[in-house]
Amino acid sequence: MDGAGNRIVGFRYSDDHNDADPGGGRFRSPRFLKEIEMAETKNAVTVTDATFTEAIEDADGLAVVDFWATWCGPCRIVGPIVEELADEYAEKGVKVGKVDVDQNPKTASRFGIRSIPSILFFKDGKHVDTVVGAVPKTHLEKKIQEHL
Image (tube, rainbow, N blue to C red):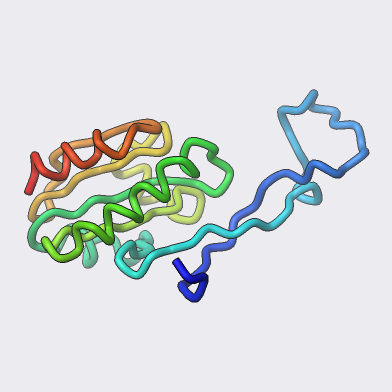
């Protein structure tokens, strides 16, 4: 990617803070957050609580939806893989959406998302399969082929 695409701003904990963390490292104040960027491809679209039905459930064919969060390490592993697959399978009519679970809790709750990343597969608007966790690209490709 040439860097000209859309950007999703995420956050990570800054490594350069000196204050003691009373939570023993488990809890951090937002002041320790530092912006980082995640690229979004032209074929992976952001889906929200307001747009989920129209974008995914009313769509014909196969749709793959990545439920993720900016603070989730495994999501940062799977995210670029999902975006690659979005580009590779766009010509075959596969739609790929990304749902930030922190910004869209209604949709995440509706589909029982308890662990992220969770990749849900929809065929003609019906939920047909789920993959949870950081999995290799080949595993997701097999799932896409299975449902095409």
